[in-house]
Length: 186
Ligand SMILES: CC(C)(COP(=O)(O)OP(=O)(O)OC[C@H]1O[C@@H](n2cnc3c(N)ncnc32)[C@H](O)[C@@H]1OP(=O)(O)O)[C@@H](O)C(=O)NCCC(=O)NCCS
Image 1: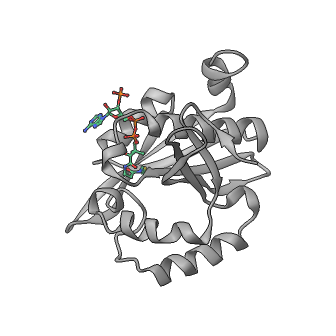
Image 2: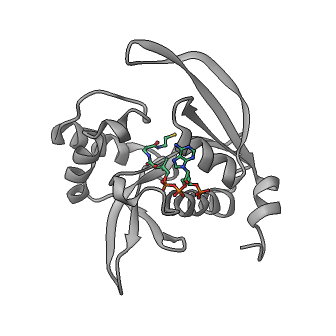
């Protein structure tokens, strides 16, 4: 099943979505904040897609669609849990909105809250964590606004543009999420 936020939905990725990922990842403003800064072709994306399908369902990347009118949706990004540790009920999450014209309109928040609801209410997670580059001010603002707590920084963990950067580690616990958003809070 798909998961719906205010204006977005999370759904499984289809093969025909892949050219959009190639275009988005060609934009440095998107890719410099993600895990790889390598040039990515459609063939790379197709390989990634096949690998994604081999992952356990709860660990597969999802597409983010934005409502674009009655019954119409525009594919605008990706989100998901790329590490799911069932014993400790924790997962690491990530998200991106590809087209820059869709930034700063609340879709990142909508996506993250929908992903957290899926994680806490369906996957029965207790902790969701994420890593973010120290230079990604927009994402840091978003995570803190949603309620993620900074636990520390990994020193010189990311090399980009000829220098090392810190990677901040953030998390939100189920009880913190419930206190803010659970049972009729939103
Ligand atoms: C990070 C990202 C997912 C956020 O999505 P979004 O739709 O722009 O997010 P939202 O609009 O919900 O929230 C962005 C917030 O950051 C604020 N913001 C924007 N630029 C900022 C800056 N330079 N410094 C601080 N805050 C900033 C916005 O004003 C907004 O806050 P507000 O709601 O209090 O006004 C999106 O910009 C993106 O995909 N970026 C590229 C990939 C990426 O960084 N992914 C995350 C990797 S950890």
